Image (spheres, rainbow, N blue to C red):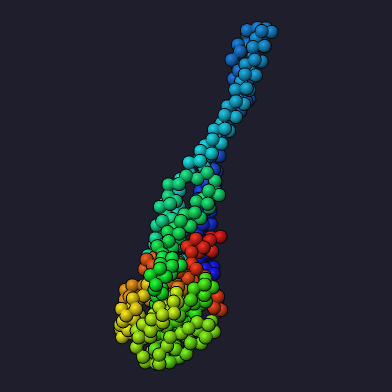
Length: 379
């Protein structure tokens, strides 16, 4: 899951680390060049020439010369050590004070942005990630290569977390609140054909049954006879009551009857299926708005196919404009290598991802948590 995102972010971390480390190595070579020393022979020769040849050399002079020679060698050794330590100090100073600049990052982050766009990440999301990482890294002081890797990884993690963190309502809390009012929680599902919306409703019904809630399903997709048969098949398999009318009936009436049934029977949830429609189909979009007016759902959830990437994002945007959705479920996430829709959709429409479909069975659905996705990408 999200393999492509993993590679892109891992590659960016490696490239930034390599580039800054290479600059360090080049600076080390420059700082490590030592100035040439004056040969010892020249010093000794100068000292000998300074003694007048006609002056007799006594024992005291010899001892004095030996002392001078010894002191000269000691001074030379001291200077050599000091010079060496100064070189090391210069190198450590460079590493200690190496500061990440925009120049270090620009090319690599531009490359990352293009890679994200190619991976179906929305433009505004790719730009936000790059800008956040740049703001986080520029001006940081580094000591060693590992610091660069750690700083870059953390900067990317923070950027992704900011993108994914969208305020969300807890469905369990909503159910409890509605129970106190003697009402079922009404959830309406919208989306286009072929995204797995009907199967997702059956999965969510199973999910809530396992939490000891009692759902009822409304077959409000009366546009196709096959849709009624399909949702009935799922409801029978999982043992959930279904409210349905014949093909061509008023979808809002079906949804209304399901809500009344839930109230009368003390059931906790009403899960309302609607006709799959393209966001450009005005008549079907108006029909969906009517269902919303009649039952006043507590949640409207857009169901999108994770594999369609930016198309799912654009669909969610249009449905949000039409009926103001409250959250998103992405299907086929287990087969989603790119991760573009999962990364982008919540940020673009400012609505949370609630669940991910992860397989074919009724139990293959998981709650979505931003931290979970961050760990999937960077763990």
